[in-house]
Image (tube, rainbow, N blue to C red; front, side):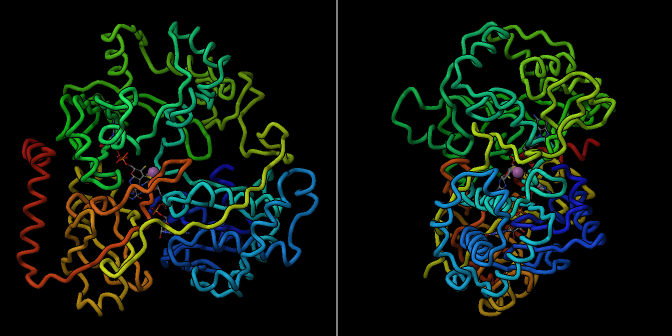
Length: 565
Ligand SMILES: Nc1nc2c(c(=O)[nH]1)N[C@H]1C(S)=C(S)[C@@H](COP(=O)(O)OP(=O)(O)OC[C@H]3O[C@@H](n4cnc5c(=O)[nH]c(N)nc54)[C@H](O)[C@@H]3O)O[C@H]1N2
Ligand SMILES: Nc1nc2c(c(=O)[nH]1)N[C@H]1C(S)=C(S)[C@@H](COP(=O)(O)OP(=O)(O)OC[C@H]3O[C@@H](n4cnc5c(=O)[nH]c(N)nc54)[C@H](O)[C@@H]3O)O[C@H]1N2
Ligand SMILES: [Mo]
């Protein structure tokens, strides 16, 4: 699907995705769809903005996604709302799937999901019968130990109702950052070269070996989230990590279980950080390579809808910096493999020459059309790219069919307990971005919202803990303990608290745990146990917050830079 198609859906099924805070521009399309008459179903444990304009808000208990998704599928089958012709012609595995989800009646999941069975039925009917239902999902799906199964579960809903391969239908992973899709497109995944070409395929390896004049390994690499394990606990010397080259990432702030991340960085023999600002990880770096920011260089981004778009240099870089591609080229050359690009157009030309799915997305075409969505295989003007996938019910599996996957629900790994009675879920807020180097270096944004961040807590939990709105509280569990402010709000349910991962002092990743989905290796950022405590001496608490913040600002050179400006 393309982002503009959102407006023309007859129904939007927004699942674990908070567009208003995370992608305000996409969120406007959701509002526009509503204005055009679309129905909206919102599945989120919090009363987010989408919930306020939704026809149905399924305010489930966090961590119960697959129970709900399976119950929706169960209802669609039981009530005879399937698109039988589509299932027959375009899919495999339906009978097995049916057998797996038979036990997931709406009644059977009522208690755990905290959603009345009748609400689940209503939502299932609405989704199955709208004619053009589109699913948008986000981190409320992906950041669990069981994530890929839920994505497949959402795909099951689309396949069984024939909501695929037509405009304004389908399943939209509204991907995180402006270029997270591009990182994957360019092969920043452990198992593929650029263009999703498998490293395990000898013919593909041979193609890249010829083009680059090197010998390439067919071994699948590792993901970011298992690096600490490979540094700290790996017994096989061939798999141990001793040096870590980190580019555009701040693992100390953004990876789960920060104390383990720090331990692993300390143990690494050599750490390189290539970034545009000092960040928390910079403290552990042996070498820092300063790069240019997005206004200071040319490039191509891929939008979450697979659209290639150009970014352009509009100002001269300030200071002793180089573009990321120049730094990589220089390092490579120094290491004995000369890279001699003179501009990004040359790099792009090489990309499309090696990736059949991108071959038609020439620089000129992207320039002319503004956005070209892959697959785009033909360089001629007639191929303007692919707005939505699976047209005519054709799928990428060898048999051309979609496959149903029925899976059973697994609870999150660390459930609330006697010592840590609340669940912590970590999310985003609109005013600050990811590890906050970019927005935290901006005084205007800091004036709007600053350290130590907030923890959203329900009025009932706050009352029983004796906490009032705006007070500094301590939030802790077996892994760590941080200070933040209490945001007492009835947008969250009793028993669950929410922090955003933007804050350096109120750093929620001191508490999160590295329970990874077995396939995607994404951590369970959305669920762990914690406790929240009232602090009697508020002045001492604020002094401590200020002390920690000043220390971090000094490390990140923020005051120094501003004093100089
Ligand atoms: N302002 C701002 N914008 C950003 C970012 C930022 O840091 N700041 N980060 C960017 C990045 S990297 C990304 S990946 C995107 C992510 O954007 P989103 O996908 O919107 O991410 P989150 O806010 O983490 O989570 C979405 C929702 O999942 C809900 N949720 C929690 N648990 C569950 C559950 O068990 N089931 C369901 N169904 N929902 C649940 C949360 O309440 C939350 O509202 O945002 C991007 N945009
Ligand atoms: N608890 C919790 N933790 C989370 C999440 C959550 O929901 N909860 N979300 C996770 C998600 S979805 C994501 S995507 C990650 C994001 O986490 P990160 O990728 O670590 O965070 P970012 O802020 O996107 O940027 C990382 C670094 O890139 C630098 N940078 C920016 N532009 C450039 C550039 O052009 N070149 C170079 N070399 N560097 C640049 C920034 O200064 C910053 O230091 O966090 C994850 N961590
Ligand atoms: Mo992300």
